[in-house]
Amino acid sequence: MAFNNVGPLTFLAPGQSVTWSYTYGGDRGTQFASADVKTPNQGAVHLADQQRKAKDNNGNATYFVTIHNQGVGGCFHNLQGGGMS
Image (cartoon, rainbow, N blue to C red; front, side, top):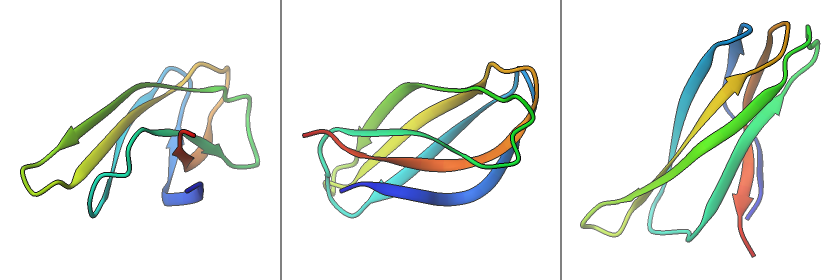
């Protein structure tokens, strides 16, 4: 299931990174998340990497992604993504 505009708006200046986590009840299989980049954009280029998954003993999965701003300016983002098919 795809998702957009999830989580609080977060500003990344050039060279900054942030790690996000999101949890579902249960295990949704492989998930991918990236930056849902907002406008105005001052020259930001967001890279999503370090996609990770943890699963607790109750079967709930938590997913992680790190977003890096590799651009020359900053902007706000939150998350978008979904499952692989």
